[in-house]
Length: 332
Image (cartoon, rainbow, N blue to C red):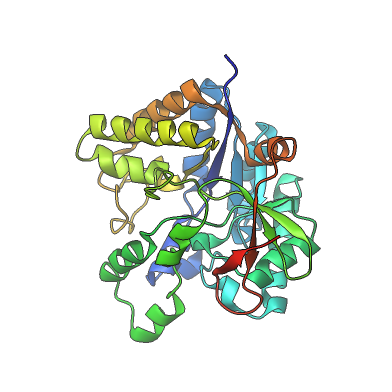
């Protein structure tokens, strides 16, 4: 039986980027856990003969302490995408020329570190804007993967703010973090943006359960495993069945903290699931990947995008022509 394709991706957010977004001190020294993290992740993937797309932050790519682990990603045959230069979830609301500089600077650092020029982008904190999409099209990107179609974004933001010490102006800067409730109205599966310039750009959302629009990426599953591993497994099986019924090949997301315990990432106790030790997380991550591989042919996002080009034409959505992040409606 031929299995439908599904995409695997990994947002390579570093210790400093979590501290920065959370408003904590010490991020300016750019502390890193990449040399500790990447060998474990590559090992989990190699044992299953899986390849995926790593979205790399440009600031990490230019730092010498990260050079060897980042180069090992490309040597292992994985794809590399652009995850911005400074990993600021508010980057998409800036002037277009500033957004363009961020993306270009990240590209150059990623090419220097890995020898690979990315052709896919994911915004930090699931941020995006019409200007950002146009810039990606200008630079020849094949796809964007920045959206998370869920109604739960505001709840995630409220939880995040409650665990932080943000002043009012800092909260305003992060007001779009994780998106708004309208994000849940967008499709769970891939579609095309109809850009104001008349061009098209593929969008591959981080898949949420069709109709319910609740997330099932690995961080979410690990949080459920804190209560019951059977609950985690049952929820994942529900998500996979719903995707199969809807004809959606899911885009499944992983994060560094899915593979690190509290001993590996000091200062990140505010993040859900950081009370689970590393060995248990590695075991659970392997279990989830095995379950996904039973139902789907797991491939990197670039290969997934290529498979979409040969399939039915996806839905086209037209982003707002100016301001905001919400689609104005279905385009032609």
